[in-house]
Image (cartoon, rainbow, N blue to C red):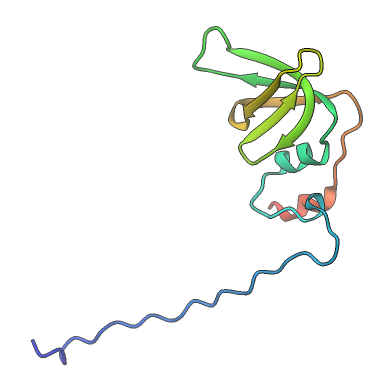
Length: 118
């Protein structure tokens, strides 16, 4: 064909806003990206605290339910890192198996982030 019967389709250009960075000396805890989970944010705000983390592994008969005691070292969208002071062991735990967390002291929680997770 001669190319005049069918025209080449055109698509509008996407407008991508410039990414913005937090101003000044704002810490990671004060500038959570919106895609991170609220549980991760709460755990991150409570780094250094002693907790009991309750996990369930449904595909295991030996490890069906397990409790980890330790200090919160780090948390991410899909993981939690605990350090057991008594044994010296470090645990890298998948959040998918987390049921709940018990804190030995008050929980640091910033409710200003709660309205951003609708």
